[in-house]
Amino acid sequence: MGLYSAYLFPFFLDLSLSSAEMQKYRPQALEPAYGEVLEIGFGTGLNLPYYSEKVKRLTAIDAELMLRARVKRRIAEARMPVELLKLDASGRLPFDGHRFDSVVTTLTLCSIADLAPALSEIRRVLKPDGSYVFFEHGRSPDPRVAKLQDRLNPIQKIIACGCNLNRPIDQLITAAGFEVIKLDRFQMPNVPRILSPIYQGVAHSGKAQA
Image (cartoon, rainbow, N blue to C red):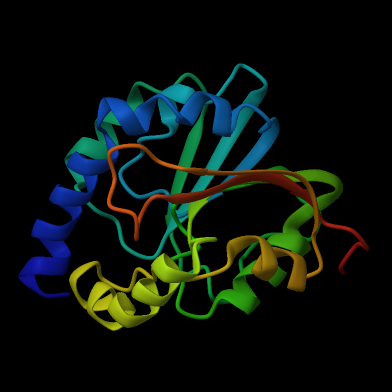
């Protein structure tokens, strides 16, 4: 990792995602999570204070461990036990099938390079009656904004370390075999229109995977 991706980008990412505007959405987004939870794309641990008491244990993974001292402090302050692992979500996860009651991604699907295998793994490790809880930014429903997202996406991937602007999140989740049982689409206020389209929802895994 270079200086920018290892130090500067994580700092600015943590700063932007810890804003009061952003934090007010987390409790509602995370409310459906329960039991033993897998969080994919842990980042700097900003979700930790917003999990409800229904969450008994959290296993968190991320391809890069960022701002380690800050993350260590946040884990120490968490209400539930937290295990953080350095793992790439695009590969096979080292967990038994149907292990987790809930899987959570928040602003994560945009940055996974090979998304289809990652979503397949989420289905595999999620219990058949479990919940996949997601809060993601993605492709705008406005064709003019979507066209701009397509145009700027190559630049975005460079400056935001792999983040894609234009992924149709609901379609990708459905294509992976999930049944989306709840979906809210809205624009995040005070955010550029290319970044503001939000997909917040819950999906079930459908037919169980081995």
